[in-house]
Every structure is written in structure tokens, then in C-alpha cells.
Image 1 (cartoon, rainbow, N blue to C red):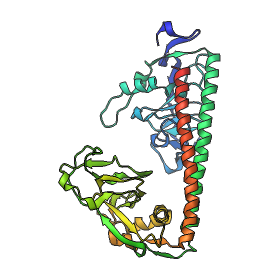
Image 2: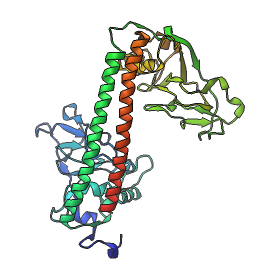
Image 3: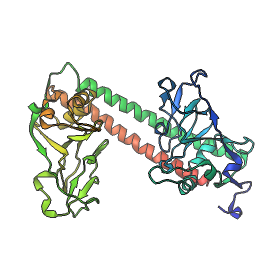
Image 4: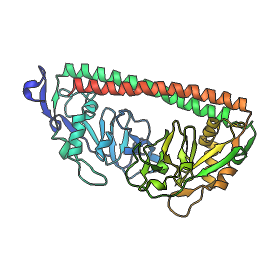
Length: 391
């Protein structure tokens, strides 16, 4: 924005002229009553609120202190867009910069985090980052960022609007998280109830389809090309068809291993946390085939509801079994054999009880989708308002 295009009363300023990077050091947080440690992993992208932290009692090598009202900015991997507004006192990672206005007569603390969330600020942070594997920007580079600053009364009005938008996102996010907890409770009580008989998974399986190892390209297959799934295709939120490798030879495609709608997939080989991850395919992908690290469980649908088994396999009780059965030598990779899978104990109530439980879970899932859509719209609206009011 040029000086000529500035709104009346606005002025172009340099970030370092109105903001200071506060380097408060605290080497003995316990004696000062500080309880929380915040690392980059605790700050969610594009979310100003810190909802997770570690305890000082667990020990830390961090010494940088932050206080309420400061803006925390993740200088490492700035493309992750990690900015937070401190609402409590704590100790943070050295990869987090702590900003506050040099003078509240020039810049309101409540507006500063939104300035740091603008595309222009992140672009400046990225352009001034150095390093290939873990690029970092620096305070000396960030303080040269220039932006238009409104007068104080306008800052107050803008901050109120943006915090109201943020509050709306937070309210929907809280509602979404409560639905997640409700869904988990239903799974544990209505699906994994210890009042039900528990039987080996093998008792309801008609077959286990094991994929084959084939050579694939580093690029994913296009819809008119054949591809083989990567183990990451079984994602945390469902099936991810783009996680595949294009086959170098079309004759390597084995049609009996192609991916069909309704298939229940489970990873047999992955990291300790991800082995045994499951998903249900929601459409036909006839150009894709199973990989050797992914299995398809074919169930007797006269006995079980596929969604019921899916939810049971994702439950804490069954995941605990999987963790105990998975084997591996060295590293974090673990393997789950077909024999181990068949021996997994799962709840097996009547088909009617299964259907009732899944109906409850499905109703909650629909509400989650609705709220998730609203959150996405509100986040996008907040970005648009930020661009309009600040940039």
C-alpha cells in the first residue's frame, strides 16, 4: 500500500518502530509459580488461542518467559502460520518470539496478533527465512516489515470486530470438540460395552485381502492411470485417494486388489502410533489397488455392521490390543500379522444393537460435518475481514 492510497489518519510504519521483541528470561519458573511450558507443537496454525501445553514440573531447558497480552510468533517454519495471543503466563520455546507494542499510545496489544496473521506479514517472514530443512526467520528481519497503521480509535474498532469473529470461530470449535467427546463416549459405552460378548475378529471375517508390492512412480496416478496406494492413504480423517504412486507398468495392476466403495481398510505396517489405522472407502477407485502394507477386511455382513466394526477398531480398548500385538525390531515401525488381526477381540452384540449404536454415531457425525463447515466459512470470513480492515 502506497502513502497516497492510505486512508485518512493512517500512516505507514515499520514493525520494529512500534513493536518490540521482549526477551524476558526466567531460569527458575517453579519458584516463581509459573506452571506452563509452550512449544511450537502447542500452537495450532491460524488459531490465536493456546489450548495445550506441558507442565514445568516435567522439566524444561526453555528460559524465555511470556506474559498475558503478548503476541507469540513461531519463527521456525513460518509457513505453518503459528501466531497466538497469550492469555496466561508461561515459558516458551526459543523458536517463539514474544511481541508487544512499544507504546500503547501507538499500537493496541489487542490488534497486534491480527497484524501478525496477515498474509503480508507471513510473506515477509517466509522471504526472510533461512535454512533448508527447518527454515527460520529472525527478529532482525521481521522488524523491517512495513504496514499501514490506523489511528487508535480505528484500531479499537477493528480489534473489536476481529475478536468478535474470532469468538464466533471459538464457539463453534468448542461445540465441535464437545461432539467429538460425545461420539467417543458413545463408542466406549454403546459399541465397546463390556456387557456385550467379545469375540475374535476372525469369527466375523470371510477373508482378508492382502495387497501386493509393486514399483510405483513418485507422482500420484491420474484418473486415467493405474496407481498403488501408499500406506498413508488410510488417513486419520478417512480414505485419501491422492496418497498413491502411479504404476510404471500398467500390466502390474492387479484387478482383484482394486479399491471399491465400502471397503474396510487397515494398515498392517506403520509407525507405532499408526499401525492398525482403519478407514472406510466412500467411492469406487477402480484405477487404484492395495499396497502390500494395507489389508482389506471382508466381513460377514449377516453378522456385523461394517461401520460398527470400523468404530470398534478405532476405539481405545481395541487400539490397546493392537499396540500389544504389533511387533517390530528397532525403530518406530511396527507390523501386525493377519493372525494377530484375526485374534483381536471385538464387541459382538446383536445386529439390532449394532445398528442402533451406529445410528447414534452417524447422527453425531452429521452434526460434526455441519459445524465443521461453519467453522471453515467463519475462518474464511475472518481472513477476508482482516484483509479489508488491516491490509
